[in-house]
Length: 419
Ligand SMILES: Nc1ncnc2c1ncn2[C@@H]1O[C@H](COP(=O)(O)OP(=O)(O)OP(=O)(O)O)[C@@H](O)[C@H]1O
Ligand SMILES: [Mg+2]
Image (cartoon, rainbow, N blue to C red; front, side, top):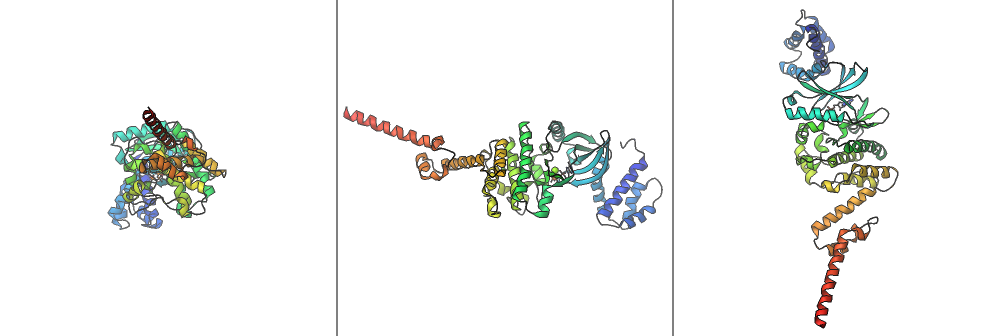
């Protein structure tokens, strides 16, 4: 821990982090920095390397400020007891992730260090710990396991399973589009992860390509389970401002509206949007800024995925469209239903649940657009498809009821006339 370390060690730590960052950022060569370091003497080396870098014109004062802010999470991570920080794995809009060794169990872990700004928000801290503890109870091969949560210095951290591999985002950035088979293989695994989480009462809230990791063996794992809940959906979306492939591309309309009763259907939307991107090479809705994208999630009609990729089998397109229905009532009724459809399509069969949802959506639209049920049901026979018999449609029974009532009235009238 920091308190027990000799001051020179911490200063040396800061020095090497500083030196490495300056070189990594291409501000100076390793030789320049080493030459600068050689000029330093005494035990105040940590501060003087920074000063020397500025006074020699290797970095500006502003650059130094930025570098110091960037290395702060790593300095903090190095203070987490029981873990040895090995390297930085990446950084997202909200946090920095490090690879570390958990000394007690001699295993690799990933540690996510959250930004300082959250420390003073008691609501965040409370949610972060509650969700972290709950997420640690989930145990599924397609979910990145959560191990521990804690606080080091002024930072909160989250310890999780280390996944050696890449993210779906990395793949999309390089190869643009997945083959249908590959995409289905990954989405199926993530749907299984979500089914498990949803049954345990968990909602991920941030399903997107960056949160799907793929191991070398091809196993897909959903990352950040239990983390998204700590930050409001809008805040998370806004933190992505200006970043390509950010949260607003996959966020559900109800999260954009700031609704509070977010349920599993928000994850189904996120997975559908991710699937869309994987098989078309395009995000479902694009725009010049996050609010334009969010507006499209709310209002714009989705370009069917098979219009962009005509080689796509129709079942896949249907699944994606049901997942991405703007009205969550028109999405899958359960994650298990989605899973059944994905499994069916993987076997070359039809997505039965999606087709039921299409019928339901069509009927809902009919009710809205044509209040005269008898006429609309008769004049739109196409919406009542095989697999959903006429007699199972509520509009059919309304029409029958209407005719029966009219007939009864007529009989009564005739009867009274005869009398
Ligand atoms: N458990 C893990 N094992 C290995 N690498 C990980 C792990 N979790 C995250 N990473 C790496 O760290 C990077 C940053 O992750 P983080 O969750 O902070 O941001 P993100 O999901 O990429 O983006 P955003 O902050 O926009 O949601 C990831 O892109 C990934 O490369
Ligand atoms: Mg993430």
